[in-house]
Structure formats: structure tokens, C-alpha cells
Image (cartoon, rainbow, N blue to C red; front, side, top):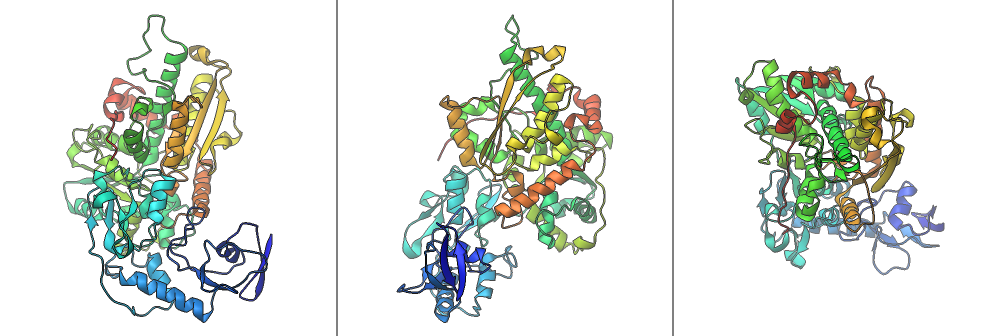
Length: 599
């Protein structure tokens, strides 16, 4: 520990702490802009400057080490003047009208200027010509609003290892974006939206598709159905003043009905469906590898595929794999994501149950993810003879629609989702968390093979929970039924990776022969979908934990906690898809992916 003084009060800090972290631990607030807790501390913006006795000039608290005997002032006139000067200079090159910006009242830059008491800009001058990049399905980039904090650069290059964004040029002409002034759709961008999740202003945000939904709601021919991803219910409340991790499933359902939605369903329904499809695919690949037919034929013509099997629920991971690991594509599950399975099921199975033509069914997805917008527009996602999912909205967009409609969210009653595609199990809920897809799959696969419940306390596979970037677990099959005797004594090794930099490390370790697994879950966003690029800002590790815990509570409160227990999923097989991995399910619920160039 080191002992220092901040604003005349003694403070103890851990060895290696910065002035910023020491002050925060002591309950002293120092304003920041470029700083990202546990991610980035580069002293680029200089907003966090403090006065240190003996130093010639103010120093940036985020990178200044706390040292023994240091005397720090965080609120002197000199410090306040320096911070205001820095902010006014940043604001002088910040284009855009706050009154119409989608970040108004949700803007760190605006809040910081207000807190620093800035009422006018002392140095109006030249402004860099703005460029509006609307080239991708998921993201909109406005260089005129950029304040050069480099947060997006850090997450794109560090957390995600994609490298689509860098500072270009120098000095006043500096612009953050793809090389050579290109647009995002011309470079290797996976559209994960983590850049938009950390941007403190409106320089990068999701493409707003709310007008498309309003138009569909006004169309008398369209029957509008909504699916809501599991991560939404643990985050939407934050947009209405609830603490992070507050479950608002019932109020969310009520709000969607009051928007005029014809049927409110749950992506969890097709998450359960995904487990039956993907779990069957895993078992068939294991059977083909460990108990091959003596005549060289795997059981069923869909059973072929290499191990390890990798999950395919995350569209940003899929696009990352297409760009960076095309040789690994055969390892991907052929299952569509739950979002896309829902769209296909809604326009085939469900349209028949209500005697509607598939073209009259308008499917809206509420997702924590910006890449889901890109996924819905992929040409592979038109198995129902049209686009399976018509519009994808993020959590933030749904909140804007609710506010625009004048709905008093906090005073809504709790309502239940519609049937049949609103029923789900706890296994589907945990899809929102890193490790959740894997755990849900193990709950069902183990029971199929052994006839018994997964032998983990409370069905929780704790080795693959938590925020560690790469997690591993293993289960040894025992007591296998006759059909699965070849798995008796086999130890299945599984891994979970979240954050694309971690995903890349796992793939590289497999390629080099340094690691061997049977099944791997990949999620592009830190924490999984609860930390998605379309979630309420700012998603810190504290917020991720609160949302994760909420999802766990949702799972544990369900009467059904294994996907194969869902009676409505069994009914959809009996009425339409027949069996998991059948020809019909492959027609509508599975797909294939192809390599892409790296630019």
C-alpha cells in the first residue's frame, strides 16, 4: 500500500494504483472521457488532469501512478480551468446539434460539459469536414461528432482484435476510422457494435430502424410479431431508471403490446429449439468420430462434420470466422441462430397455425446486438422464400420507441408472452450469458445420452461461468443408455470464449495442436449477449455482473430448466419439423457460411 493525500485527506492505495483509481476508491470523483475502466488508460483527452505538488503542470490522473507521500488536488481553480479549456477545445471541433442527436440526454460528452460548468465555447474556429458512413447494415459512423477519445480503437483492436478502426492522419486533421478514409463495409468489420457501446458521443451508433417498425404497425395487412432476446429483459429497465440487472420481462411484454404488436413472443423459444438441433448435431458428430459405421456411413446424411463443433449463435463471431479463420468454417454448427430460427418458424409453422400468408407476417427482433441487423440481411437467411427476420431493433431502439409512444414503462403491469412461441425454459434464458449456450447444451446432451440429469449442483456448470476470457470444463459420460454406449467413459472437453481476441486465441491454439476440445462456445461481446453492442450504455464489468446475475435468477425461477422439456418445442416438431436434424429442419433451421476477404 502507498499513502498519499488527496484534497487534504489521507488516502491509502494499492501499490501500482493510479491517482484516478486511488481517488475513486476513496470516493473522490475525477471526470474522465477517454478512460475505460479495466480496458483503457492512455491519457489522451487530458480531461482527468489533477494538480500534484511539485509537478510543473497538471497531470492526467488516469496514467499518473500514486506514489508514497504524493499530495494531490482535484478541485483547485487551476485544475478546473485546465479541464474547461480542454473540453472547450474538444467541443470546438465537435459537429452536430445536441437537440436532434440520438445521444441527447445519454451523452457522456454533454454531461461532462455540463458538470464542468461550460456555458459557451471560447474558441470557435475551423471544423473538420464531417463524413457520414451509412454503408453497413448495423452501424452509422459520423466523423463530425468524434472527439478522438480512441475508445473505439481500443475495443476494435484490443478486445475484438478486428482492426477496422485506427486514427488516420495527424494533428487537427486526425480522423478515427478505417484506413484511407474507407467506409466500414469495405473493410474487415464484423459489425459487433462494441465501438458504439463505448463511444461517449454519437460518433458511432446503431442504424435506427424504428421507422420500419412504425410503418409495419400502420400497415393493415401486416401481422407484426416480436421476438425478444433473453438479454433484453435484464437490461431494458436501465433505460427507464432501474438499476442494472433489474428483470423487466413482464413490463417489456406489456409495453410491446401497447405499441400495437400483434403477438409478443420470445427468442427463448427458438433458443430451446436451437439446443435440440445443435445438441443432436454434436452427438451425431461424436458418433461419426467415435463409433463410425463399419461401411463408412454416418447415421443420417447430415451427421458429417469435424470436431470440435463450434456454436453459431453469434453473427459477429461468424463474420469474424469468415474473415480470419475460413479453414475453421466446417467446424461451425450448421444451426442458424435462435433469432433466425424464430423468423423461419414464424413464417412457416406459425403462419399456418393462424392461417396467414408468410408474406403478411412481419417479424421484428429485439436484440442486444448490432450484428443481428447484419445477420438478418444475409442472403442465407431467406429460407421462408423471403427475409426470415424483417427488422432488428437494439435494446436502445426499443426504449426510444416506448418513450416516443408516451408509454409510462415503470407503471405498466406485468404481462405474459403469447403462445405458442412464448414458452421457454431456464436453459434458454442463460443464452444471454457467456457460457450459457454451452451449459444449456450440456444439460440436454447429458440427459439424452444417460437418461439422467447433468451431475452438477443446481445444473450450473460453474467452471464455464464468470468473466474470464477463456474457460474450460469437462464431463465424463457414465451410465450411458444402449444407443450411446460408445460414449461410456469418454471425457468430453468443452471451452467457452467471449471477446473476439479470446476467440482467435482458442482457434489458433487448436490449429497449432496446443488444445483439443469437442465443443466450443464463441461469443463476440465481453460477457456474452448481456454485454452486446446494442445494450444500454455504459456496460462496465459491474453492469455485466448485475445483468448476468439477473439472468441466473430467471433461469433458477423457471419450472422447466432443460430445453428438451419445453412442450411447445416438442409440439412444433410433431406438427412441422418432425425430428431434430431432419430434412425439413435442415431446410429451414440450418445454413452454411463462406469465407470472406480480409481488407
